[in-house]
Image (tube, rainbow, N blue to C red; front, side, top):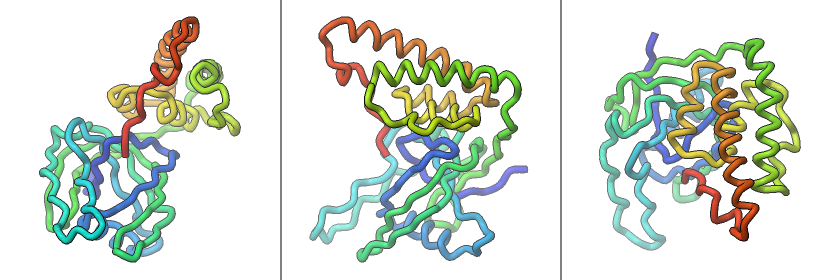
Length: 237
């Protein structure tokens, strides 16, 4: 059964279990934060994060001392968004003196966007279906150690001093989301992993991507080219 969910279009891909800090300055999303904070303790304190295919998720805030209001963003259509998103659960909210918010969220549940709607709320909403998150099966348990080994090799080549794997997750699903969020992949590749039907499928795809990236990194390290020249920039928030 489909449900209606507030959605926040961004230029990044959120995965379950991953932390996403946000600075909220648009009035329509300030309204959303106030509503979520005021909702009952046992009610939903989450909104959907969906990734933009093109465009900008929000106008830049007006410079300090500028009395002109920030321009209104262009309307968002369903075709502007990737079809699979993830909810962000509020964990910490700090209201600033000017009414803006700094919030800390954590990815929780995946969903498919069925239809983007504009109702009485000032913010964007969508009709969505929840995607299943079944426990990892035997194949996922078998693939997890291989994916972790490939991830270690990739990180050693990319950032030898990284602390990403100081605390290695033992759950294959958690590991699969960590790899998807941390590896320097394109937005299309991240979305492919977010939309994977199950943990085993995600880990299998990640093995292919990590082996490809490690191969490229190994070749570059054999010539005098800084690794920073190879690294793709992460998707901006």
